[in-house]
Amino acid sequence: MSEKVVFLGMGGTIAGKAAQAGDNVGYTAGQVAVSALLDSVPGLQLALGGRAVLSEQVCQIDSKDLQHADWLALAQRVRQHLALPEVRGVVVTHGTDTLEETAYFLSRVLPPVLQQKPVVITCAMRPASSLTPDGPANMADAATVATSEGARGVLVVCAGKLHAAAHVQKVHPYRVDAFDSGEAGPLGMVEEGRLRLFNGWPAVNSEAGLVNLERLSQSDWPRVEILVSHGGAGGALVRSLLIAAPGDAPVRGIVVAGTGNGTIHKDVEAALRIARAQGVRVARVSRCAYGQVVGASTQARSGEFQAFGLSAVKARVELMLAIAADTQP
Image (cartoon, rainbow, N blue to C red; front, side, top):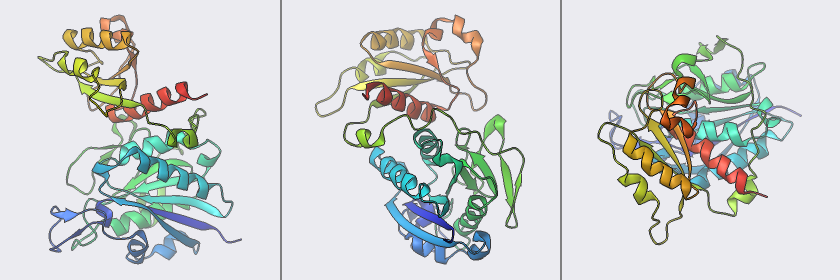
């Protein structure tokens, strides 16, 4: 049985088209099918080492408009493909705006046994219609990573750099090298079709896959919102979240991007205590670009709220999954 690499399309800039070939900004995302994108990648078969290709369009959207249902559909398709013995790995083409959230989500919901194979998410900062699109090179690099010896876990490839799902963040709104892994740094580089690892492959979290995706698909996802603490902040936003508008789900969790070491303005903090008393889960992170909340702040007043060593958007995913797991029988 010959090995296969599966390419799953989610839309995004990599599948975008503009009226003018020179326009790298005024384009419409999610216009080109993943099968057509594959046809535009020079040297793809060389990167795949002769392995067969299977492609599937999961959705076709601008990733800023991604919904929980899109995450669920992607996770289910990735899981089904990885379970097949002939599948060497999965490559996902995705928009850049919410790529880091999707990567983290997959790393937390895919069972550890399936993450012994690689799931490589790639993207583009220029549309497919660009005079100099970056998508084809990123797809070829993703194929190289997906077929590399020992590759495992949820990974991100962009502009020749290989990142782990736990650390990757979008750090620039326009340049092609738009992703960074902060203090952790990239895992490696893809150079002329060859992978050079700086560090080993990321460890797979043994607690991944605890949420029952089938059950989650039959119920509403826990509503978790993100707030930022800042100078002059007040508790009005927190109080407003506690009052669900008609047709809206009640808020179940709040992530606060705190100043410095995860500290929170006293007025916001007072409102968050009220929220917690009403059963809302509260978590805090630092709004700083580097580092994470460390132990000293656990002695401060805001230390009573759980701290995550994640970005705010990833902490939201983590808290949402934790609430879902707690409510599942």
